[in-house]
Length: 255
Length: 255
DNA sequence: CGCCTGGTTGACACAGGTCAACCCCCGTGG
DNA sequence: CCACGGGGGTTGACCTGTGTCAACCAGGCG
Image 1 (cartoon, each protein chain N blue to C red):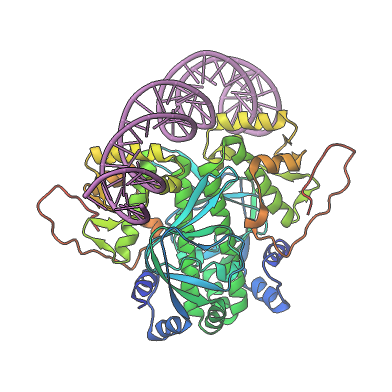
Image 2: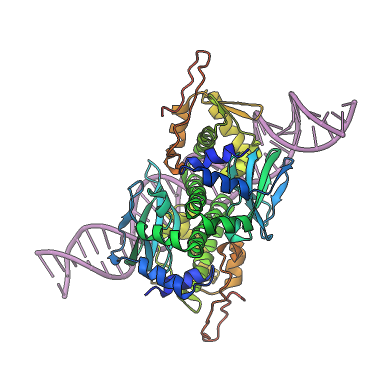
């Protein structure tokens, strides 16, 4: 059941049997949550962290005027609020974008685990540091990239992360954000998001339908985005499997 | 010598004698670096983390076009690249904004320390999580706040952090960024930064001179910024000392 | 069948970027 | 002592990417 989590964490470091067992033991229960539900509200006191098993979730903050900013996106295998273990209260909401299945890990269990297993502690810490790195890249993106660059960059990022999690199907992957949400993640209006997406489609860079994105020209997309995957720290992993596709000018990441 | 660090970390959790000793022992050497020097270059392999004892430092990333984004600011007491302990290579540069004094902590020492002291490990982890929270607030700021709001917010943040570090002098604190750098931190042009600053000064909200900022009307500033310090997790601390000032309409944070 | 959400479009407004000049201050060197 | 050079700040004129507003369309669901 934790295969996604293990896959995710193994991009950071190898897990031995003991680590896996400790993690499995830490989980208390699995819950299902419908789409567009708030899992965690900012400032509420938390007693367990949640592990995403299936679906898409976002973290968001907003201003008094109602403007919302999505500050992070998570997919299956991500520990979505591991940071609540130490922070206790979060600075943001966590909202489901799709129906979601998730496991709870009581903070007490994490406490025990970090007391007993320094190596696993470092791996968990490491995973929060990677989140941090993603945050920094988003700051760069929103602060400096053009509208189309931000969108292209986010698509590159989510494709790579999906691939690392074994969730891609060749050049396609699930990307269930509405244009409004995509805009909120990129710090721009849904109207402008719409126009930028049209531009990417017009130029045959990506295709979208049914909540899925299909990358038609990776090189071009990465170029528009100035995408360099180093910040994702996907070291260990050299994932892939690109089932051969009907002959077409589809270009995918080389590595 | 580590008083700033201890003060900083005690806003997260209390340190006992053993913790303090362990930290002190971990430090190998102290270095001085001039202003505008690159301490760490992105992607270089690191073997120790640096603790800032004095001065201002920023983390920055840039685009091919040369546009630069400052993704974080650090002052005395901050562990500026603790995350390199696990990440090994950083995703950004670290550059001094002023002359700086800093201590090195070899990763080997951190390894030992995290092996032996789970509680201290959690505190260190916690401090990186707080950085993360600040990143998220910056994403919100750059993504959604107006130009003037971003600047006001950054000033509020740095004032609060300075205060927590015991570096304020009443309503004044050291803020040695040029307008160019301030713009780079807020994702805007130095020209626009200049105009927004003028507006804040014209309305008697802040005064600036000699690399120092003096807050004249905290309520108004926090209002423009929509500032809520919760994301800084300055829990424990109720810092202050506002030496009474010559009667004037200076308004400071209530708490 | 009719609503409601999400996508699309056009006309227009404006925050913020660009470019270019000019100023002041301060440090350096002749 | 002064000339100079360069970095930072300031200003004005102008441009443009993105926001705003409002209408309309398509598809899914009760």
